[in-house]
Structure formats: structure tokens, C-alpha cells
Figure 1 (cartoon, rainbow, N blue to C red):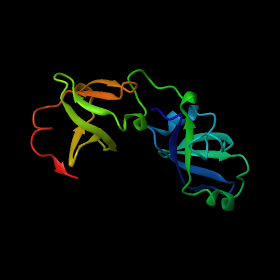
Figure 2 (tube, helix red, strand yellow; figure 1 turned 135 degrees about the horizontal axis):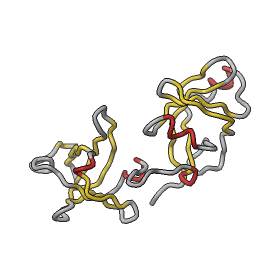
Figure 3 (tube, rainbow, N blue to C red; figure 1 turned 30 degrees about the horizontal axis):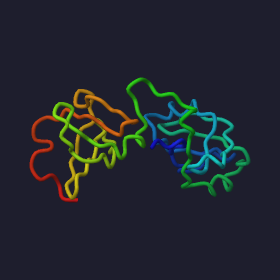
Figure 4 (tube, rainbow, N blue to C red; figure 1 turned 90 degrees about the horizontal axis):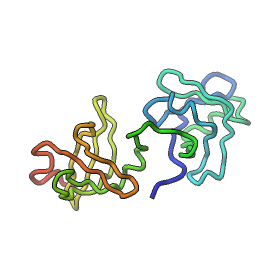
Length: 174
């Protein structure tokens, strides 16, 4: 089941002396979050953060929140995770929120053989890697377009086109 409010990132520090905050974005880029009109302090969207403005800066997002006007007020929010409403952002065709991928059944796109459940998406410099778990075994699968046949969030399945050897053998013991 898709969550309505998704983790957007974490406040990692203050910036300047007027309460501006530095958000480490958990998105493809800080620019993606520029379109967000409001962040929330809770995963239910009950506590709006009072977003006044945002701007990208050195791979992070600098944000101003209502009522945060000093370094001390900003420091009190350090480490807090902020959430966004999925209805407030738009994804390109064929793109998915990573949080929606977790829990998908991973199956072979040709044979239908089940490989396990997608447990984690690991960000690496080259590409994301899916950690797929089946029982006590774990497999690492490169998330590259030509190896993914179809992703169906609603059906809870991702169809993979693995190269020989990825799912052969014993896998790693969890």
C-alpha cells in the first residue's frame, strides 16, 4: 500500500544566522524538492512545517520555516526527518518513489520465477542496487533500465530481466 506522506529528507544543520536550515534530500536531486509547497514533521501529514521558501545549495536544499528565525531555533530541529505529500509532486513517466519499491515481489520477466522481495534500494555512484531477499538468502540486483521489464506498484511486483548468475547459486546468507 502506498504511503501518502513520504520521507523527503533530514535536517542536518543550520545555514547562516537567521534560522535557515540545510535539508539532506532523499530524492534524485535537491531541485526535485523545489516544487514542494509544504513539508511535514510527521508521516501522517498532521503537522505542517510551515515552509516559507527553499533553494538548492551544494547538493542540499536550504529551507526557511515559519517560526525558525535563529540558529538556536534551527539547531533544535537538527536530525528531524521531513515528509512530503505525494500529491504535491509529479514524477516523470516510468519513475517511482523508492519507498514504493520496498516490498515489491521480484519475479523473472520471462519465466515468472519468484526471486524474493525487494527489501532495500542502495544508492551507488553508478546506479541504484536492489537488495532482494528470499528466505535467508539475499541477492544484489543492479537497477538499470535494460534489466527491468516492468514495475507495477499497484500489483506489488517488479519484473526483472537478470543476466545469468545473479540469482544462481546460494546467494548471500542474511
